[in-house]
Length: 302
Image: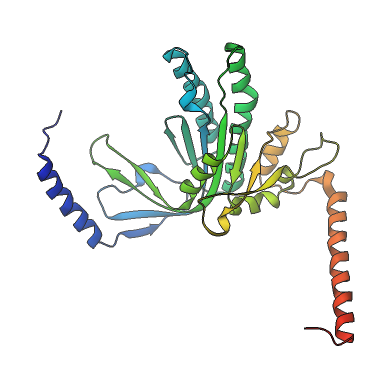
């Protein structure tokens, strides 16, 4: 153990550090391309700025009650069984940076189709929890299965980052300043097991993608899968989010996920539905113009 300074000397030392840091104006370096944690500054007063980073935050529901009379080793096995696949999913969908925080993990996505890859990664983690993890837990403990599953959040924003801690030691880590990680975590906190909540910028992307927004060809009628959800403790329009309770279809999931990640948005099977919606909107515009012109002719406009 390293020799420890007296508390009074710690306070003097840290007081000088705070004063020195607050006097400085850190340099912000615009950084394009993938996030490389090894390239982050630690001692220098420099931060890297990454534009429009998508964050997926996956948290294991009910983790504090997982033991529930079970042996400690069993609880540990649940953590390993759940979190490792979630990390693998984030990696396979191309996350630049992944961090594990106890029973939660988050991934940061940049680059081509990063927002779509992040959304698909979140849905895939949710699907894993619902389709694989929970049945396995119920089979192992049929009388009293753990009540868990992943709660997913997703958000996007510019991020500032540097490493903070003690250089030339193991005691430092990247810090991410910006809304994406914070808002994704808040979305996750407000979700239930097997739910995914996204902020408005992500919601806007989902609404424009027919593979994400509508139910698949297996259903009798293609209906919206997402519902409106106000995200508390998220400021401004970002709080106008969406909630998803369904998972990837076992028949269509592979192809739909691939279509989304490769940039596709238009489903050929929805051409007739799209045409009906477009015609309905056209009729609404014509009706509004007719009503407006009649009011003008009668002198009652304004």
